[in-house]
Amino acid sequence: RKDGADQTHAQGTGRDDAQPSRCQRHSNQITDYPDCDDAHRDPPTPVRVVWGTTLSEFQAVPVKTVHTVVIEPGMRYDAHHADSLTRYITQTVNIRALQIRDAAVAPVGWPKLASALASSALTELSITTTPLGTAGAQHICAAIHPTTMRILALTDTGLGAEAIDSLARTFRSDSGEQYCGVLTPLASLIQLKLGLNMIGDAGAQSISQLLHALPNLQDLHLAGTRLTALGAQFVLRA
Image (cartoon, rainbow, N blue to C red; front, side):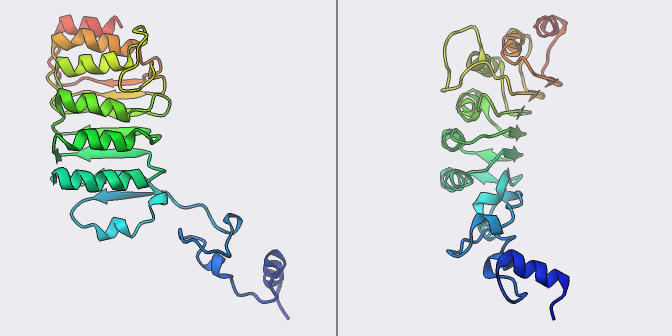
């Protein structure tokens, strides 16, 4: 005689025995079976993967579960690595965050990376202690979705006044133009980190213009940007 739990199980599955179906046995894995429907499977648990020299670990992770990709610190990413990373990000249809810290990305890597991210609904893009420069910043704007991006960190990336001006023009709401295919303003952004960049007073006015295009910004990080009292006034008046 079956107990109450088994009776409930049998009633729910329509089976006479208490053995779980193949679909149920794999309900916590992203494995497709022709006799399984989505109603019998638990939703995938979002995971964070680190992209580095050891590929086997993240290749074993189903791409549909990946929500955060972290570029391994201290690595150098040449054109080959950039191509591989671009292909991987293109497959991670549910990616929501990309974090790059203390890495060296080849100049050809930024446009490829931005192109792969352009079709995503990224909510966080964090690039720190990684050379980016003006050209890289111009490509990165293509990866910023105007309605989903909430955190943008470009700390210690070699940005100067020219790069900040480029970002300001990207999101300037009164220009009547679109830059990098991005609609303005960037209403979803709540945190912007630009610290440890050589922005100076020359870029302070661009920062003030940038702030006008960020109506819901809550946190602005400008430590170590060589702003004087004059530059700070431009920012505070925004």
